[in-house]
Length: 365
Ligand code: SF4
Image 1: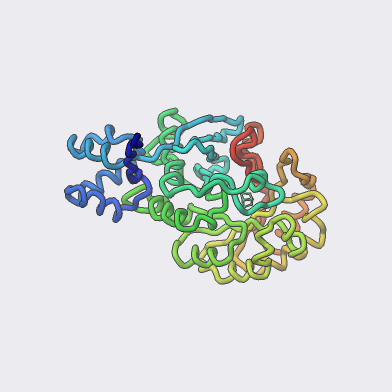
Image 2: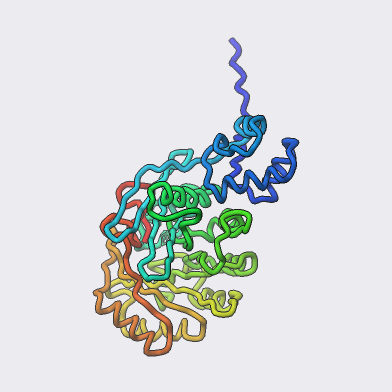
């Protein structure tokens, strides 16, 4: 008996991952004129279309060809939780069934900022000791389309729910959700290319921040190849402690990290953000404050202090709030910009350290 021959065809390309130049090539290969790529790009990245059917100014025959030969990668909203402070946590399912999360934080400063914290990987390989995402390991990188789609779907959600007016409710993006953005450098860079493009979502590079645990060579690449803001998840002032809480430090020491920060191209008026999660008795001593001031004092920087959110099963405790104030005031007294970052959405487990805490693929500090 002969076995049936199963033809294996490569998956149709996800057009959401393509920048305008690549989309123009795809459209050209289909025999369409280049301006059709612009129309398609606008539907995808300004009108947040989720199907080719919606693209009513494209000829029907072209739309039918797109359905047959291409696809729009899909994030399906699995769960949405709203906090009393306006924060909304979204859990998405990817096409292969993985769970990822994004957190929407509306403005509470009077500056009309509406920020989305986005994920870049399913899980994370960095293994930070205080972070539940880190305990899960890395499942896979997100594609550029999956990174971008978190933004578009939240924009669409906010408009449809009447929570914010269109056409572009979100003003700020932070790459601080699940995963280490610089461990997925190429796809993060490609997503930035789309999100910052004037023909697309047109985010201002002053309003987009990429955060890293400290992959030094890619900090330098980020500075050379993009023009967005940098945040460093620092969390310790000695290599001995940082090696323990953030294993990436065993590869690139604090001195290497700070050198990369000094070499990072800084436009006028920009600052590097240092995130410093305070763990009781581990990184919150008086000496830590002095060392921290020495580390960041010669850089245009601001330091955000975050009281740790307990994660079940992980052996870290939050520093008392008085300690958070002590660190903020200690830096301010030395002329260094510092603030206590509010834990948004604590009641829906969307605060730092709590993403996917209810059984998703990971939890994030
Ligand atoms: Fe990964 Fe960030 Fe968690 Fe570290 S803190 S394990 S880099 S998600």
